[in-house]
Length: 166
Image 1: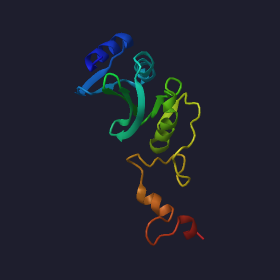
Image 2 (image 1 turned 90 degrees about the vertical axis):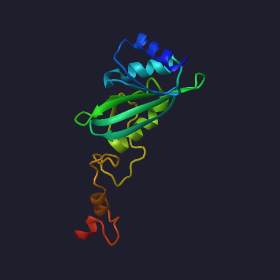
Image 3 (image 1 turned 45 degrees about the vertical axis):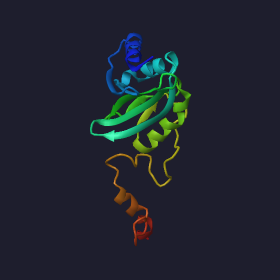
Image 4 (image 1 turned 30 degrees about the horizontal axis):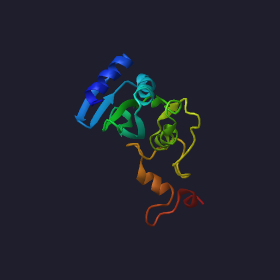
């Protein structure tokens, strides 16, 4: 199967709107609405036999984009499934029940960006420092690293705010 055949099969099986951007003969990006994430991921992973590689998240102007990367080893191409969680509702369906390999990476994306994964079976801290409050997410563009460092005495010649209050 090549990318063209893959997209045709995905369109036929999914019956939902997808935006396709073929980067090369080895790389395709599929952008979908967040409501279709679980459905499309299930088709790619279970029905079409792709391997889940990793997921990444990034804070962009429109919200939080989460990318799920799949490989088709036999066919020698990579598919990246892209979806967006808006700033005012940073929530996506968890893929953990469909793809067990997403358990930890969804926890990490939650820790660093604050995206909530509905239906995740164990959404607890994974990589977030104990210095960070529950509502502080270090990979968000609005995270004030200078204020954080001042608060915890991490700047040169600074003391944590708690010590200054004594």
